[in-house]
Figure 1 (cartoon, rainbow, N blue to C red):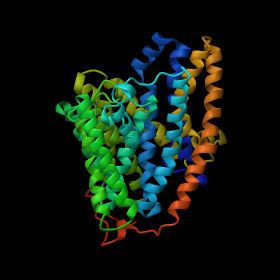
Figure 2: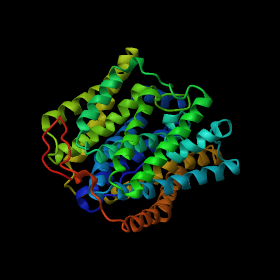
Figure 3: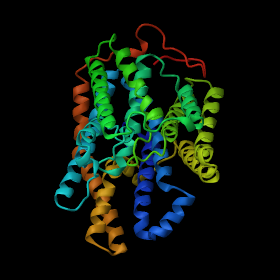
Figure 4: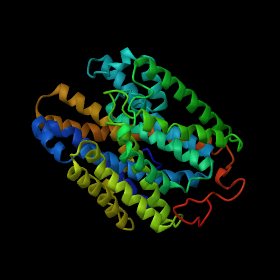
Length: 420
């Protein structure tokens, strides 16, 4: 699920390696029932959710990388052009493949495609499927809802020159998650009609926001940013609109967004953009949130989620500590194709299961097929899309919104030491 910008050079190769590792972890989680059988798979799942571990690791990496990308561009217009041409080509390609397999009788589309067509189309157009109560055409699409929302919020904070407030967001979202037993899960999507209206309103807001960004006018940037920031309401009030979505509650949805901001906090403190005390406090709070959120709601699962929080944090810490070491080529290659691998692996697995009942053949077909399809999609879909995005972005002048009209505002979690 590599939706962040592609790191270049050995200095950031560790991030590619981390993405490649996380993508393989998620793929193995989905393969597990075939290899172990459903009963054993569920036994392992009850002790340690390998899928959530991989996804939270992805979220932490995205949180670390996206601010770096945004500030490197120095322009919200260039940032969004890059984002759109980075994530949509492989995403749309996956949708086309899914419909093709469905037409051939080799894949079953979610029932909402037929029963809630308008909401499904708008949800996929905005990538906010999970937060609108819609099952993705391909199940892994649910994580892209949080990726897109994170982009919108971070870009909004950048437009308002509040982009150094990462620690406040990480801490605040975690507090909301822990105290969020009374948060509504379906305030905007309890019925099919409400979901359709919400999807339409969100699509309009995002269209207006993107248009304002792409116009490149400084006076419109705060308006576009405010619209993006306001969409965080989907997390705290519509995080579990239907049983089709993956997040178990709005509290859990808020916590997943907090994990992404935790990655941003690590980036900020590493580059001395916020103080260490505030950064450590925010990171410890997010760690506690991941460990406690399930226990706080049900009184169970404390050990399971503490282990989860420790595993995610420990994996990232090890990779960070080894960031100056030479990274194995296989891991950087997996990182390069990780986005396509993440999007397409379940389609390959479903096809392998339909064509053979032999676990050994399924495993071989899944491994070979997934790696091959991921490489092809990366080579012929992702890279051309990125190249087109760069050509379009280079036609526009860089307008650094964060430094227009005064000094960037300071996060209360630490001293502002440098401007972007």
